[in-house]
Image (cartoon, rainbow, N blue to C red; front, side, top):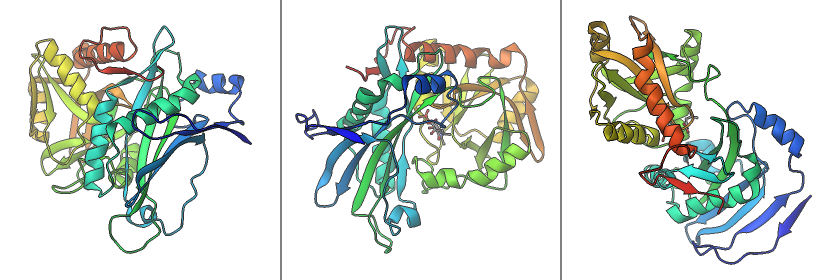
Length: 370
Ligand code: PLP
Ligand code: COI
């Protein structure tokens, strides 16, 4: 049973949102129990957003509805040809109770780039931001107040048209769901072990590696399972001898003199966490190198003492030191305080900005609940 809120005035993006409240929303007690230990991606809030797109009508019918199953024709193109993209960002609660997001304009822009590559329609940035605000307006109680917890926001878009011919769909849906989140890795921010996959590649030149599309993650699952077998939490993918990225995070190496080196490639995802960390490092006067980076350079640098540490970064994981890289005929170990110091201090500064403890000098934060 739900109650419909009458049609509201047109939004800044010019559309009229229909909000249907979930009458079976979780009780305060149940929600608070979940927020005590949310883990990652296991629980979902009471509502969701969806919008339709059609070739004729463009973006229309924006709704906030009770969270629940999406009716889908068995011939929906996404189920056959994976025409799908997604995003990931977080809502943070500040000490005064307000709710903020971090550089959502960047997620909106990346979703547009992913859409172009997957022949999906581009969602205007203001509609993307509006969807976040609309969901927070009904689900703000789900934004945790515990330190280092947040509400993970997952926008996604897929081909809904029921048609088995292989071409770009003429009917598409955009959705937004949210999930309270603690640390991505059950081990928290402790150093992780990474498995170097030499059997499988994540992406190729001209492929979809730079787009945030489900297929990239589907193809990472088998190597990821191999990584778990070897006692590793993530997989590192290569392009030949060159380092690309992990299954769901970017990689950065740290040199003895505090330089940061990260791979440049047209087949990796342009991480917003990565770009922000590099910006913070530059603000500290540290040198940043974004260039081709071979696995040998990492191995030799670690052996000579030139490379003292490495870290993974992404929205879900934030910044997590890499303790070990393991592969069929390689093992690189980073240990001791020097291996994690810079990564942890950049993490501290970034989360400080996100949670409102550190001045937002770049204007990265956007308030969602006002
Ligand atoms: N690379 C991949 C494959 C990812 O899935 C992610 C996570 O979104 C990232 C990198 C990091 O991107 P961001 O920092 O924007 O979350
Ligand atoms: C994110 O960090 O937002 C991602 O999409 C990565 C995924 C492994 C959860």
